Length: 246
Image (cartoon, rainbow, N blue to C red; front, side):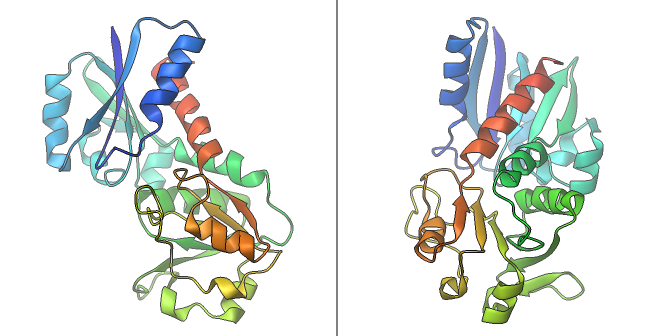
């Protein structure tokens, strides 16, 4: 039996096992199994690999997309530049890191982009934010990070610094934080939603629930919205291609 899985913590919200189970059934793949591997600390990763010799591929989610890199034997150019990995191929004991978030995000984001979306705010500074940054650079979209505390010397703002003028200049806003993710559905990033317009496009990497409070507040102001469902499916399929060398 070929084994694949997902590491992260916690993993109760994950769609991956159900998605791959349905994929295996739909495509009549009977020799594969996908499981969850919740680890409380990235230091447990090495033991996980040792104790599961049949593992051929691993997806990586919050909070280990950056810290898992130290365990890799090889990594792609995207992982090198981004400093984040969300997909690992294991072959002959060697771990190669990939980033399929960039492909999923670019394809999903582009479907609703317009000429108004030339400047963006990236909410959060974790591994997913790095993948978003990589894509925005590729698309020629100027951006600033937003976090609880702005960082000196970095293109960064704090939530308290977001004004009507800044939101007026940045029509694309991407949430890369887990705020609003099930079960904490009553939370959302602290941006001034009252300054949003119909020209704004708010993209949430969170996919559970389908409409986060972040997206609900944006929709109430007439903004374009999209969640992370399409992105997740695209990156899952890219992972499958990597693991099977398609």
